[in-house]
Image 1: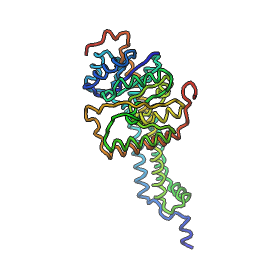
Image 2: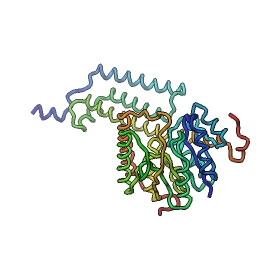
Image 3: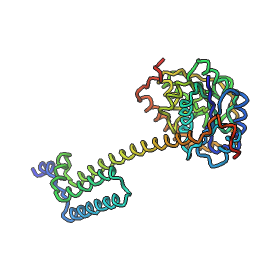
Image 4: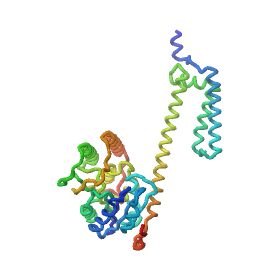
Length: 133
Length: 238
């Protein structure tokens, strides 16, 4: 009877201590992001997603029931496993997103380099007056 | 018929002048462009002194970007045909002239000079030959056409081929993937046997492990290339 219940009810919850530490970390994280924006080290368009992540961390710390709901939906008994799974997926998605951005920018850099290379050409008409080194 | 011959060159100060002279001898009617891929030696200065046009990339971008620079330039300046050969002197311009006239006479869109087709006295190391054969097998399977020298940088291109590659051109796997691209776009791809001189400098410091990894990466690139949507060749498929 007990074991049947155990399969549906998360039994491992975050301790109050863990929640307090998570909340503090989330706040520090968001302050850090704000500071990066303020000092022009991070573009707003890339900061929003990180800021949302910080808010989610804070929400998870303040309302542990959210995490337990996710754990139940995933069919795991341990709320911390749910936490790690969700975080891992989010980070994977973000990492892939940045690879996409890096690919696009590398293409743009190549195009720029090619355009500038073409502009360095002395046109055939001017070729008689070639620069001697 | 306006023809451009270009030479991608990265730190080739020892050979660039001889290559330019060779091209002038065998392709006197063609304009000559050296794409200097971020050289830190006197490649650009020597090429300019030898009377070639020189496009200098601001930093080394890899052979794919260098080729594409020339295609973009050729299209913007109304060239109908272009030929290319490496700056290290391993490609004889006399052979390139044969490839170029093949395209000028409209018999193909992309002609590749092959060390392995029929009579060609080229000898490479065993690892290199094995890799070449593997590429050849895969590309031939994916294009349903026998191509023996997939990494050759001696080529001649029609306007249609240049237009295709100006739009999209692999940066790291340029030679191999472009063959697949061209065939899939409906261009006529041909191969002609050429002589290649052994490289003067010991440029190939590729160890077996590195080349095995390179082959593996290229396999994936080709596989993904098979899944790309077919682009109709510029001006419609054939």
